[in-house]
Each structure stands twice: as C-alpha cells, then as structure tokens.
Image 1: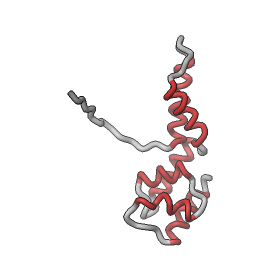
Image 2: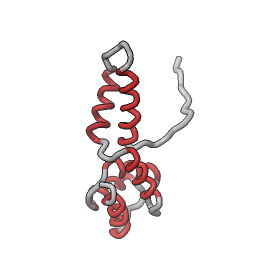
Image 3: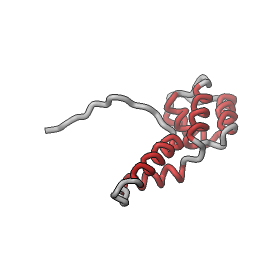
Image 4: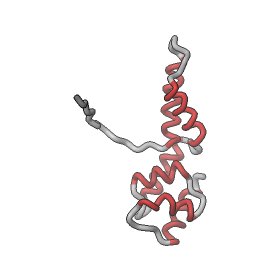
Length: 118
C-alpha cells in the first residue's frame, strides 16, 4: 500500500533565509537534554553556513529587485540570489534550462542588480 502526502504549501527560500531558520532550530535544540544533533540537520546547517553568503534580509531584497526585471521568474530569482553570478557566462548557465535566452543588455541588467548586493 502506497501512502501519498499532500503538499499543503510551497515557498521558495534562499540559502541565507534557510540559514537563518536553521540557526533558530539549532538554538532551540541546544537547550534540550539531547546534545547530539541529527546527521541531516548538522549537514543542512553546514551547507547553509558555507553557501549562505548574504544576510537573509539582503537576499530577500535581492530577490525583490530581480523580480522587477522582465525576464526573471520567481524560481530564477531565487537561484540567482543563491549563486550570485559574477559574469555573463555564470548567469547564462542559470538560464540554460529556460526556453528563452537573455540578450546582452538583459544579462547586464541582472548582473547590475546582483552587484549591488554581492
């Protein structure tokens, strides 16, 4: 018998936002009697600490600014905020799976927004 779970809600988060949430969980768990952290939680915290370059507030602001651009979808904005591409080649790799590509000016517009936060 297969049991399926229903997805009730879905929300995009940047790595920096996840890092902030995991810090809260880590603090809550440190006060408990069980000092050992589950492996998955420890790895998630390690990953977020390593790759969450911006503050959660800055990453949210970056996503909001990116969403103001015409050819940046919500999912793509979150990818860009996590990866912080530095040049056109890195940005093109993010758009490689899309059905469209950006012109040089559009790529530069996105990179200009990213450079304000990186």
